[in-house]
Image (cartoon, rainbow, N blue to C red; front, side, top):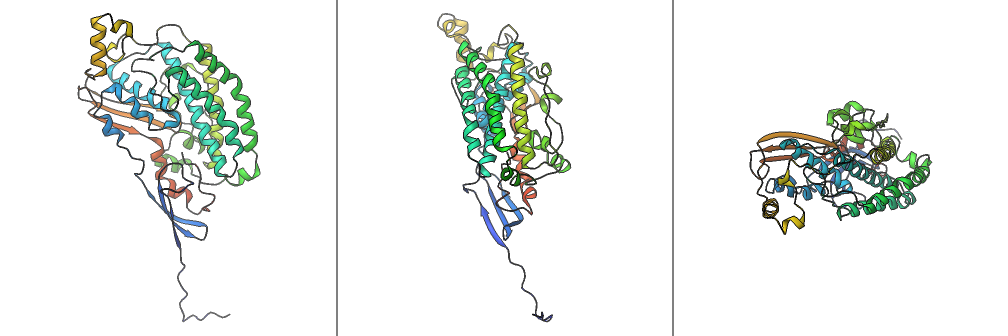
Length: 388
């Protein structure tokens, strides 16, 4: 058929696809309005704010020791890291030095939380690509981690563990027993999970070159954590700005090359092994001594037996519970290496009993800004990747 140049060709039509905010394939509530050419994503417009819960404003109305439960909800896949990050921020503000034993216990708990977070991310990537078995194999290990948390603090998911100035209690013999069991058996289970997915052709086809980002673009967006390391940048807060005695531990920083979903999977897989190594080192070299700094009695509930028998302890109990403890004026920023990247706390105190201003640097919110760029030109069925 010979085209008539005098008759204009019809403009190409595109389809608008509303992915979310309640799409069953999304892990969390967000919305993406996609402009589609068949199955190919031409552009995407992200809608933010569905998960905004006013944490910072809530925190500005609460005493410092009552803000930890709010941090639990920021990333409940690795809540203890959020708790510890907040405690360290307040400790930096008040000039508190935490005993070495408490620091090592914190490291163990944070690395367990990191493993639990990575288990979720990597196993759900497998589920999204159609592989359910790996999810079932490895999720039992997350259950063992939660049993340790439950033994340590009485909670599993939203832990509210630790206290400003140290830990609320030492590990019990049962907690050490469960920890030793996990350290012994986890490598075998992780290897099983790795064998199911690592060289699986279907898994590789559905993750390699999917959602890639270069190191330059990742840095421009402000990427941190596994997503930045997958792009080839070896930035890790635990190494660059050590906290909680991380300088005492030997571990590698795994990096990728392509910054795609497969590299992100691989980086988290290797980080679980490194976290296990850190836990073993902390168990082997655990210092003796107190688990709480004696310099900050204003933030540590006295023992109940003393509350019932001593007036001073009763007064401290009342003042702490009612949030009547003042802190010095100051402005601090403290960051920890969360399960998904740099988790920062920017705190301004005017000397009152609650923060004057507080800002949480949440890593996943920053990643989401890059989501439209990362999926442009991709197949809609292959771009539903785990961007956490």
